[in-house]
Structures are given as C-alpha cells and as structure tokens.
Image 1 (cartoon, rainbow, N blue to C red):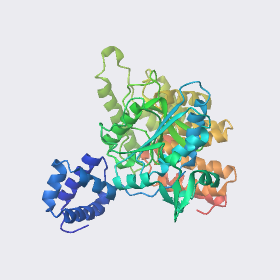
Image 2: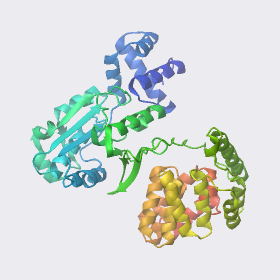
Image 3: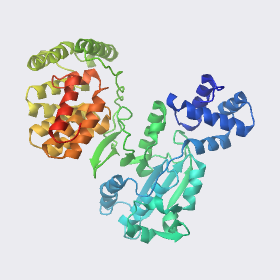
Image 4: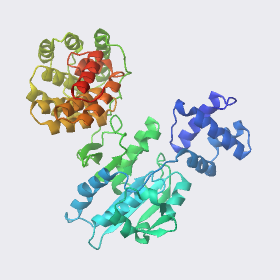
Length: 491
C-alpha cells in the first residue's frame, strides 16, 4: 500500500465505490484500493482530496465506468456451469414445451462480464427448443463497459470454448482468424445493457419479467444491505416459481425468505415462492461470533442470553400472541455432561415450546437423535424445515436419520445441502467423510475428512456441543484423522 495514502482516504474511497457501484471491498483489499486510487488520481491530474470529493458528490459517470473496468475483471468461458445449465433445461425449459402456456422464455444474465454466460444460455435455449413459434429473449447486464464491448463483438478465443461440446462448437461458431465468432442468430437473441445491480432504478427490474436469472459470483461483492436489496429486486423481477442461479459459494441463507432451495443435477439453485407461499417472516441473524473455547458452561450462559433476547423481542408482540418461553440452558448443561436422555426429558416436560422458534425445535430434534428416536427426530426436522428451510442443522440431523434408516444416498444429499447452506459447518463434512469410508471411496474420504478437520479448528463451540455427540473439538479431529488412516487415505 502506498505509504502516503491515509486510512481515512482509503475509507472514503471504499465508501464512495460501494455507494456508486454497490461493490464492497474488505480491509484485505486496502493495498489494491490504494494502488487504484493512486492511479486514478494521477490519470485525472487532480489532488487526492479533489478527486475524492468529486467522486462523492459529482455524477462522474465516466469515472465510475473507468473504476468498473478495474474492479470487475474476471475470466470466464462458455458452458462453465454445466450442472446449473442442465437444471435450467430440465426443471424449466423442457416442462414449458408441453404445459400449454405461452411460447415465451425470458432469461437474465446478471453480471454477464464479457458475455460467455449469456450466450451459453441462448445456445442452450436454441438447442432445447426446436419447435417454431417461440419468443426467446436473453437480457444481460454488467457494470463494466469494456466487458460489454467485448461481449457485443461476440468473438472469442478458442480457450473460452474449452468446455463447449464439439457438436455445439460446429453448429454455432466459425473460425475468425485466431478467434471463434458466434453465429449471428445467437448474437441477435441476446441484449446487453450497462447497469448497476445495486440500483433500484435499473430498467431490467420490471415485475415478473424473467423466468430465470443467473447471478453467479456477484452477490459476494456487495455489502449485506445492498445484497439483500439486489435479492429483493431479483425476486420481484422473477415470475412466481421462477429460478435463480447463484455461484457455488453463494447462498440465500440469512438473506431472503422468498425462495425455496432446490438440489438437482448436482447443482444448488432457488425457486421463487408462489404468491400464496410468500411470507413476511423476517430473516434471522447470521449468528453469533465464533468461540474457540470448548467450555460448555460458557456456551450455556450465552444460550441463556439468547433466550433472554427472545423474551424481549417476543414481549413486543400482542399479549394474546406471546408464547410461553422456556430456558434451554439446563438442557444444554445436561448435554454437556452427556446426559442426553435427561436433557430430552427436561425439554419435553417444559411448558409448550415456541412452535415457530427454529432453535428450540433443533435442540429437541438433536436430543431425539441422541436418544435413538430417529423417526420422531426426522418428523421434527421436517417440521422445522417448513419454518426455516435454509436450516443447515436440520439437514445435518436428517442425514443422520437417513443413515440410521439405511438410506445412505439420501444421507449424502442432506449432508451436501447442509454444507452448501453453511460452508463453515464441520459436521456434515465429517459425516460425508465417514460415509465415504464405509463405501470404500478413499478419495472422497480424504477430501471430506481433511475439510472437516480444517473446519473443526474454527467451528463454533456451541455447535460442537449441540452436534458433536459428546465429543469435544480435539476428539472430533482425532476421529477424522483415525478414519483417514483406517481407510488407507493419508491424514
């Protein structure tokens, strides 16, 4: 980082970028931002203070475009996300061919970069819909004007087609010197727009405008409030039951309740809820800070604080709607001493639980699993998922239930969903590793158990208490290591 650039100037620069473009950069990017600020000030021939003031107050559309070029550089290629494209075809396009509805298909590539994704969608639509009379339109939007200019050229390196099947290459591309030019009929079906996804005024945010939206690896760059705003606008722009595809590391957990999570074709994606499914339930907080201590007494104290906070929150509701709250700290205390049966007795002997409190239901389901009452635990988990379908803990418990019932593939599916919903959750990775050991999959065992060991180092102590089966952090890591050695996979 340039030594003469103050942190205050970098904070101003970062805040202006976030406000004008929606793109957020954490402290780890300060070196990059300092270099960028220095280059832009030099390019503009202004003082740093004048440059920052103009960026904060003036329209500066040209400067925003220049910044966007620097801030959104990314390499992509055709048919990069085949699993999601397969899901789009089979879950949306193919059923539309025989449903008797209008012969229209509207797709949006949000954050389209240089156009490879948008054109892949256009090719997929043409390959899937062979009958005449269909009105197919693909819109594509990006904040980077240089990337959009490349997209409109529609001529790409052969490397950009490295995952494109040979027959599709032959049908839709032709050699153009050292590049491959896209067929005119595909180019004409894609409409590119310069726009900022964080802007409420963007022209593409019309209600019920799209059947599916691809917004891959874009949300991660937004601040939380802007991310929620973008997701709200995408939900409004989708038709009811329309599909939303995000990047592999992106989820709507803690962001939106307007979607159902789907998992097919090896891909995770979302379906917008229909009008009568839309709920006004507020998304829950992302969670508390991680604790590296395994002191379960401390965890119990924090759990009591959580219950107290719930009491305060619920007390604001009308009197006739206030449920009876109960203190789960004694149950956690008994869990910490591996007295699971007594903990379950305490829970079930307490006043009626909060039927719409996912934390309470999750605790009871966990205790049912520990007590061997698998069918009851499964039933309770499914009830919990009706309230909070993005609950990673419930999916993990269902994985345990499915394994007990001899349904290993279903167990793997629930573990994968849990790991997708919460990438920091160690237990589904550990369980996937143990399942891989049992099936003789050495590579899978090594991959999942190594991941579990890494995650366990920083796993929330409260989750180790809840889901660790009486084992502490070190014992669970030893379990991973021993399972790897026992299966022939190197630890």
